[in-house]
Length: 478
Image (tube, rainbow, N blue to C red; front, side):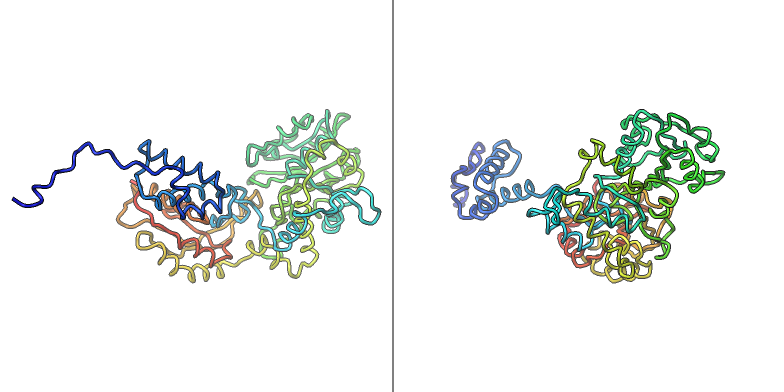
């Protein structure tokens, strides 16, 4: 008989070890770091939560050091900011869901300069009296667009709402039936008119509207004629629309204000940079009384809405009570002013304005970048993901030139050949989720059997590779 046979066997009903107490864990020297970072109260609550998971059977028992690691991981997750930087590799430059325009450094510096201290937001330094906050940008907007006056609200939808309510409340607003658009977030022009207290008067048909349609509709109850730029759709084929210049002359003759909702807020001739043509604010104001447009689309600044045009109409709009409800803060004015000043130097604008710089990148330059990154990305992702450099197309986004695309290049991430077509869709979704779970999330688009990382908007190559250093791999989700 061996000695081991003489040893008593362990009973089957031995209880599992009890977890340490809250006080013991908090007294552990390893707890000093989390307490210094998050505070004793937060660490205590996290310790109790982790211990409860163990008691309830939701987590395995571990030593004090491992338990505190769980506590710290829990606290780090709880304290991670909800609004985080991401790599937008979707191919949509002005991606509404990913923050639209990137601010130039000058704008970020201007915001930082006013956000932590007092500023002359509504104070006239020359007279020592109360000032008008729109004055910080109005002169620049007028200089760049030819407008007589301008004001700023929190987005272009607010600008449209304010114009309608101030100029046409309880009156008719005439709009072509083909321009009654719905944009993101179920924003519908007819609904906004109803909220503004206006009565919609549709003219023409979906595909054809003529000047005579407006001539017949304008009457004593007309408060405004509005043209809505089709920023998120296009109608092709048998179409017609009233000439803006002729429509402007008609409104002047009838004494009715004419407004154009331009949407994307383009201040320059983008065709001079090789991009598809898009109407400018200055050109629109040649034919109408007011233009409304966004600050964070083609203009390339911060989210806001701008109303520019006739001085007397702007004065009426500014007196509307909604103006105060829709006004913007000092950070918005600082960022907008700094961005508008870049337009005063057109010779360097394509280099200093991120939106224009990204839109004008050539396919050749992007392809060269993809070839340069390919080996490092393939090495980090391992053999499970097949990485290839492939051509693709980008789009401007945020409703600007919706049917136009820009030639680009991407890193196409294909599933392993052993997977088969049936599991491809689930695998790609799993892969996309893994990229979104990186410390700095990477957002691409799935298409044509691959997760495609369009590099048009990638300028921080080292940061992108550093984010991939945390790659944990991806497996078949099934």
